[in-house]
Image (tube, rainbow over all chains, first blue to last red):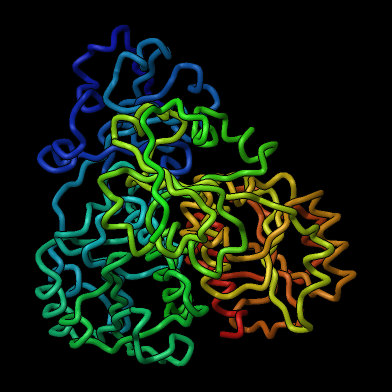
Length: 267
Length: 267
């Protein structure tokens, strides 16, 4: 049985990480991130989660129903419980279904180290300039669903460990190895050095996705909705098109990545 | 040049449709719906939009920049303009980028009439029990992107003309002919009567999507995330699987529909 620690006040210092902190500070400097909700906690407490958990915080009213799930938490991870009144006093985050946790980023691998560790046949999703948390979360969900080996984000993209990105990813952000660093150009250099064929997905791409036979090492690149990938990136890559009905606005970028992954993944 | 009608007060009765009205009432009884934002208005003012517009309401500050777009509005559609202060007084809806419109549902075709009007080769998306506005919007976006001939929703699904569904569809809800009525069973009966092969998408499906050769008349059925399609529906259909990496939660339902449409559409 897990160790429930009942809280008597919302000011308890042991739950400082859950408090009114700007998420930017929590994610950036603190080395921590927030997980929430049953579906994400299922992943966070499974062996697929790459990150350590620091603690969990749940509503007292849910403790009994969640006991089987919480039993999967490592012994050293405290599970704090509190009444709804006390939870409501911890105003940093809306408590999504009475179930929150704090994860630890730990030592993060560089993009170079990540690529160096991949097998000879590998599929990497590369997201460039994706500033929308839903889209980054959707990309991580799809990368996990299709077993992508890794995901790379340029620094202009938002962090896959932002709270909303994790929630939209339904835990995919905790599963797929990723790095977020540098410019698009630097990431492309690194991928080319590591023998990856660069695929640039765009409505103006030349190769039709259904006709594409992938290279052993394949990098699937997508850009932000609207601007898409830059001309400089397109010029360095094999450009690929998902055909669409005339005149309609293009697909959501996470959906486009999902369609591409379905075609390219080995599963 | 379009006819701009400048408003001097937020209480002007000509813009009653934009006011604090429960969306349920507006959409249900009023026969109206709200469109908002530049991307959706682009579609709403194009020939692809199936619906009539009643009026537009824009921020004065945007009138000049939007003049070329507004010039596409039919002569009889008034374009109201107001200062931001007055717009803020119209509290029914947050004014998304200073650009709103009211559309008219008009006479809606029944599912039976819709199917009767389709060609011998046709692809119909069928959404059953999809109560999430984002997912209904995402399905309509993908249906438009891949040129689906029609979309059917059971009455348990939410309305594609809800404000958020239209926004997420980036106008797809205005383009793809749809009907929303009755039970899943009644829709399946109707599709079968009209010679459609029923495809039930599910992680437990038998046929792999990539191996599937579609029938001339194909109905692509998806259910809500979590429960999915019922056993009764699965039993009446050919079941289809999108393969996924072991143990990960399934795809978002709109993404799954997008992947299926990419495989099945003729474009």
